[in-house]
Length: 281
Image (cartoon, rainbow, N blue to C red; front, top):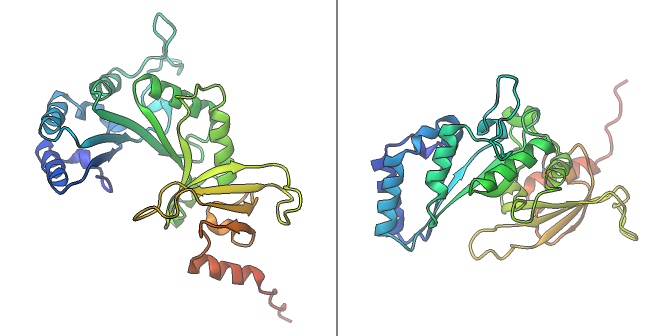
C-alpha cells in the first residue's frame, strides 16, 4: 500500500483495505509511508489498536510497515548547538514523539518495521550520516531494507548521485557496523525488477576487454511471476558519470540478466556506435 501515502487515510479505511487484501489471499502486506518522519503522532494508540485487531482476525498474514528516513536528523534529537543529544549511558536520543511511535510498532513481534530511502545529492550522500541512520534504526528495533539510486526522471535528475558513487557511499557507511546492522542493499528499479548494485571494482579483470577501469556488477534481486531471473547478473565497464542503466549501454560485458535487452538501451547502443556527423561548412 503506497503510491500516495496511505497513512493519510482514516484508520477505518486502512483496516478495510487490510481486511480486503487478507480475504483475497494476500499473505504479506506492506504499508509504505513517510508519515513517521513528518508526523509520528499519527502512529498513536488508536492506530496500533486497529493493527492489533487485524492481527487477531488474520494472525497468519504478515504485516510490514516500511518507513522512509533519509537522514538521522529526521528522528534524532539535537541540542541548541546542533549536536545530537545523548542519554546518561552515551546513547543517541530519539525525538520523543518519533521514538514513542517506533516503540509502539517495533514492540509487536508479529509486525516488522523497515526503512528504505533514496541516496539524494546534498541530503544524505554522506557515509557518516548513513552509518548513524542504519545503526540507530536497528537499535530502535527496525530493519534496514534498501537504499535506492534515484530514478531516471527529468524532474529528479538534479538530486541523483552517480551509481558508482552511491555504492561507494553505502559501502563506506557500513564499515564499522555489525552484521545485523548492515542488511541494507543498494537497489535500482529496473523494469525487470529491483536490481542490486552488487559491487564496483577498481582494478581490471585480466583478459576481459572493457574492464580496464574496473567493472560494476548488477544482480537481479526480484523479478516478476516465478522470479525466473532472480540472482542473474550483469557486468558492465565502469562509468563514474552514469546515473542510470543507460550510462553503461555502450560497455556491457556480460548480461545473463537481460538488463540491456530493451528498446531504449538498444537505441542508445546504435547512437553510441554511429559515426559522428560531418561538420557543417
